Length: 348
Ligand code: KG4
Ligand code: ZN
Image (tube, rainbow, N blue to C red; front, side, top):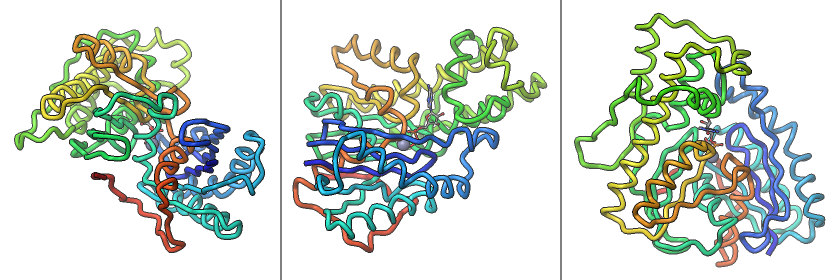
């Protein structure tokens, strides 16, 4: 079964063709990072316009790379939420028009479900049950996957997502968007023990995450030391960045990792798992990958990540998620709306 996936929920226009849920025939991602970088974050109106400019080329390229014709497609799947409503509408309208005119089964997919499946793309036989952590720019969600296609949300961020906190720190430092890769780069040169942040303990015994407190503490620290902004060009010679900023970045990143480990450990006590999955843009971070892997190696639990290209937003993960539902005969109707606040709670 050849499924065309389409993703346009934020700042990547992406299309991919995946055969039988795990065989990636093509995956094309057109990133808008350059457009948004100077604004320190994604500008929704600019994102929608760029999706409109790119969607046709991106889908046609995915077909050409897969060496397939339109008639070879057995399903069209598209992200219909959560995300920026104008951006979502571009992919959704395109997908509906294509599926309707070519008489192909059509399915809307939750973007978060895509991230959950991104880990299975290169490892279809992962040991289950599993804990699956999505750490992205918009979400920090922890799921328990009982078996393929059945999961339940265990924890989410009460405020900022982990990636959002990294993006905001970078914006304040003047080093632009996306912030995660910048903080990763400069944190390598800093001492993570010099600037400490507390890991929030939540009174209601929930396992929820919280990153806005540490973000505020970092901004307060910068004010206290009366630090202005960096010239983004300094990232070419990061050793010239003042030591206290390197230490701040290292301490901040360390604290994000510690909080993720803390919640994973606590969740494991409630929900035993045979593997840990970590996906979403923040899981590109090499320090984070190493730390989580080493932490669970001590408990004999293997940790799996998607390949780097499948970690940030892409359409292969959307096609992979759709395969299992299309195979079971599910389709969506033509009035499926774009839902900017779509949630992913449970499927049992
Ligand atoms: O999954 P994603 O591409 O989009 C969302 O669904 O949000 O994640 C984007 C997020 C951004 O916050 C970005 O700063 C972060 O992933 N990110 C990273 C790294 N690369 C991207 N965070 C930490 N380290 C990285 N290397
Ligand atoms: Zn994402």
